[in-house]
Length: 428
Image 1 (tube, rainbow, N blue to C red):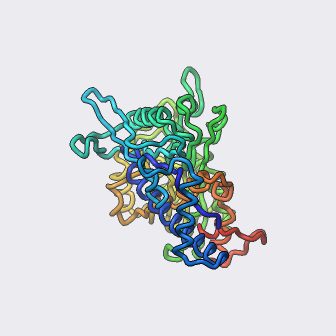
Image 2 (spheres, one colour):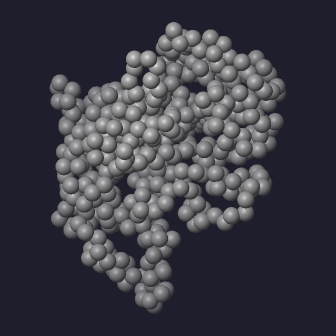
Image 3 (cartoon, helix red, strand yellow):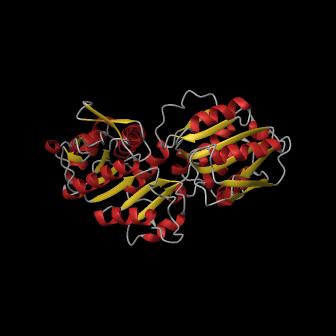
């Protein structure tokens, strides 16, 4: 294992992204402690010195080789796994927001966290000011924070935004803008080098940038791991169903990994209508292509908004004889009255469970019987540590190998290849 040296790593959490940032930091701290312990043991064994002496050598090397680790700037703390940079966020009466970075980040590798879909109250001025932010408020907070970090001399700036803002506005029909592209270009113009996000709605957005890189992560490993622990459902007569044509590739991946059949719900939409909530969507007709009679159905999608499309699909599957339905959502937004409508659908017996990630902060659904939350914080921590060390992240972006390894252990599904797994993949 390569030593994970965090001396130049700095993390800033915007209001809204604070909870997710703290969860990722905990994984980074564990990774640092584990890496540090292994390195100390290796140095102690190689040079026949005590663990304490090896630790002193590592600290001395950090202070000599890594620039800017002087204790006066507070960066000496980060050599001990304290990555977070204190930032003062101010909210003015007219709605303006200001970011003030409280210690030096000159020459640092800075990661700025934000959850643009967090619509719960966020705190300013040490909790004296509380306000609910829209996605546009969160976006503006990102921009002023990036600007502050760039002016403070950050060497590299990476945005950690599990939900990419305006990602559904990636196609231009008639006289409308390509907002997904425009948002990214604004970030790029501010000096952002990387964006780490989860299950981007359309990969076409990547093509809009000149230099900025997007690292698109996937929660499929965590979701499949959850399925393997769920009442033996994978031993049932099981079928994967794509909820629409846009999700075919995603569900084909699950069907291929699990060695299960794939079906499709084909939806006809009336685009003269606007989907407002679960009871008023623009879907005019849904057809099932495949067989779900007496089967456990699994559906995966990138995001869940009002829930109207999902509930209609569930009803069609139940009408066609599905025994129980499990859904997996990477970005559980639950907008409008989605939770109320899903409560009603669950009580009606339309579905068994919905699996969602912690990519979006939620308070109202964590105690629901039908909801299963899975954490992708460790995944983001692994990607951040590798990017910080300029290592490859390909095995984390394409997680098919570790999924194969998981299923070969838990379900005795034979791997399609015999390539060995690396130590980093085994950590997953």
